[in-house]
Amino acid sequence: MQTTPSITLWGVKVSPYVRKVIVTLEEKKLPYTLIETFPAAFLKIVNQPIPADLMKVSPLGRVPALQDGDASIADSAVIGVYLDKKYPNTPSLYPNDPEQHAKTLWFENFADHILSKITYDKVLFPVLAKPLLYKTECDHEEVKRVIQEELPPLLTFLEKALSSNNQWIVGDAFTVADIAIATQFSGMDASGYPIDNVKWPKLSHYLKRVGARESYQTALKAA
Image 1: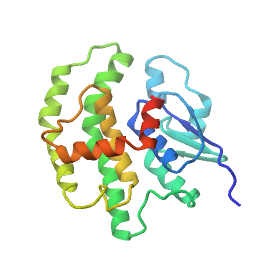
Image 2: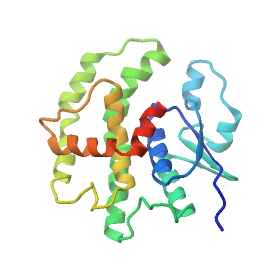
Image 3: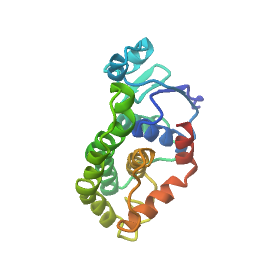
Image 4: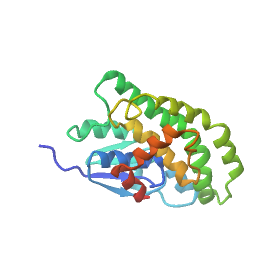
């Protein structure tokens, strides 16, 4: 008999990676407690104490970090796999079909490590985090340049990926790939730079469908 999980999630709620884990937990109907904290590197910059419990869960001091009983897991992608394996009786977010499973992991990696280089590093961070941490104003002209010149190829790629008859980015099942992509764009929205729904209508409609899910709405309310 599977016991009720005792899950603690560490992270700051505006982070798309933390939101990604929140949506995952909500989709799987797993109870959890969220402890708000910036990563250790950010806390050092603002001369704030680093929670000792965070360092126990996440050796590098990064968020999101998750503790489930005696198990400590860091990194949103690793957390997702852990939750799916640990709680198989909850809805799976990873396809059983080998090809679709591989595509799901690929799109998650794309969102976490390629799309995020713009949506997080060059938009959300300079607009929201940098002024808070470094007490410097955001260069909005540079952000606009990035959105106009660097982001469009990635948006066009996603638009084409959504051109099939699939309901979601990989087949007809909602997966972690959808969560990873949508939460990156939640950072764009939070920064005041939503995507152009005229230039990328399929992507815009897709993000609205993900955003309408109860799990996603809960993640946004958490922020």
